[in-house]
Image (cartoon, rainbow, N blue to C red; front, side, top):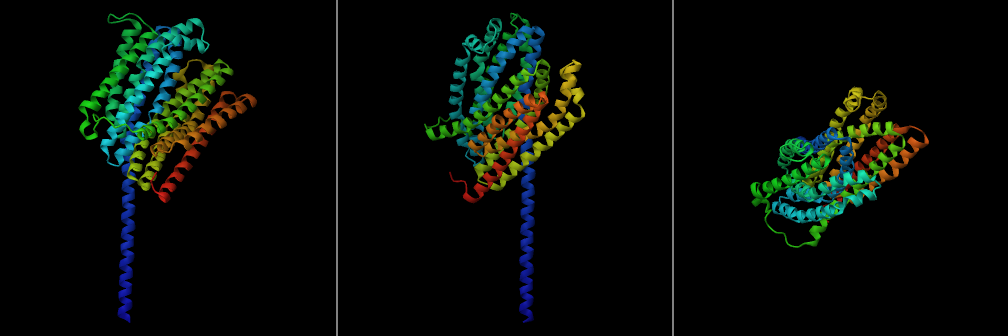
Length: 478
């Protein structure tokens, strides 16, 4: 009897010990996966952020060269640039399916399918680019339609026409760089953008001011520089993807069979992204107009605050793009655990970055304001806006990262509706109430933006939790 009890106790101890070892092993594996996810997010996000900052740097250089050339030319560039940037942003949203579906296929180890996604995306990008070009080429008609003064319409129309010629090349570069990012190779795109920044300085110097034998062209010359660089970027990226890179592994030269369902999948992801960008950009454009109703000083303060927050938004955009790729890979592997790790890692990674930026805004608001203006009255109005930006960047960055995470999981419709509702049905009415009814001015606008971004962030986080639960219970079958 004692012997039997002894053996039972020994077996029970062994069972407990093996369970304990299993739990320890699972905990160790989980920690390793989290650390790997942080490392992968860092490796992907840094080149993407640098590339995005490089694109902003090119715009900044264009503005500096044209601004120093002529105030009138700067106005032409600003108006034409607003239209062309909005159209390109929406077009790039339409092409988001490239990076998401490439990452899905990459996660499943279907490397040939990655190449097929690229080959299907290139004609789609060309069609969109050519349509946008044709829309913008009757540029003087477009400017008159927008109610511009005759001299401004004529000057900005020339700039828009030159920008239009480069749109197809810009989208081709975007699609091919998205393919590389989706297969976890963002470095070529980063390097090319950095080289483009160097070329852009010399091209602006030559075309804007008329050096090296070129005529003096002002804002049109800057647009020529931008279009030329887009052609160079598209050709260079084509050489990298189709000639130098691992083109045999991905089968980028293989012509895909006609498949309406696959084409529909690429477009479906893009429709949601384009709608999100369109609603967000459109809402902020409406806010810009409303800020103008408060007077020139309020508009200037709002513009500075928005520019400051946009620079921080680039960081969140980089983390979001990296997370979208990793989420696509995790979904391709059909691993709910990895999806959760990617989502929560992205949240934590972004939160650290945003809190660092928030601390800078709170500690150095006067210095930041002084970079933008020497007007004491404008600086005084701008300082509190920069300080309150510390909250805006946290919530805005969070919603940007989470919408990319959900996009990587190919969840399109609900996030789009959530963001649209936050910006249209929460932010705009709140601005009217806070700024115009309760007389909080431009500060009221900022409060409304914070509330809208916070609501969007909460909606999207809850949606991510529900999506993970759904896949855990129902599986990944379509």
